[in-house]
Image 1: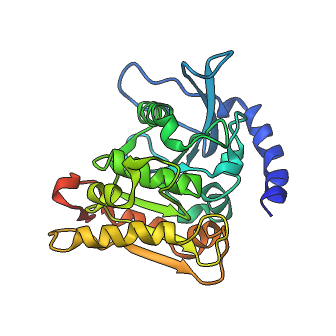
Image 2: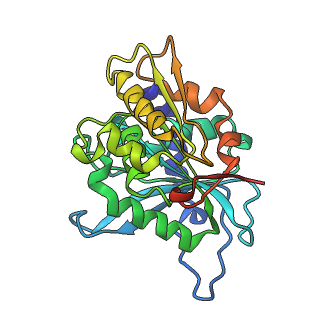
Length: 280
């Protein structure tokens, strides 16, 4: 199904790439934010490790009715290994991008879609690329810094745990889907992750029939977080949804069937040391 969706979607994306309204917007020198065409905008960023040309491609989704004068809730999405590459487009064909295409009204967010260049590396190997893309998006669009959310699937689920752990004060909430902690090093063992993310709103998903990433990879982190939340004040209890019939693809159900957009919007960023607060 992922292949068929990509076949249908890529021509549409290619057409958008030839539309001038989809070109990269330059940050304003007068501290105002440029207007943007609704939909997926395809962009590039200069990096030092990209080889010839020195650029990486990525995408940003602009919701219907985006008003550059108002801070807009924003989601950073980290894709799985199958969407790795340098085309700048595959990463919107699976997971959050697919869900947005099916129901844009449910996702009134700016959404940021970086692309990891190869299947072998982990997202933690590309920390600077991701942070630079987020910073560039914040310069070009009116991103609400208190409603910046993080989610991803498979390798991106592992990346969600990792980036949540590395930068807990940056995010308002996390949704890791079929993620893991192995392959990321001792810094990202369940107890290490739990210490740093225990105060964040988290909703984790995994398929119980997953034969690619065992569901125990998620439940071990969830158990560690629950232990760290004992006695903690002013926090949101971690949620976990284990899908009985889902194999590795638990992301379609997660992004399409659980009103995650509305769940995200409940939460605003607050210092991880002080817990989280529900949005008014």
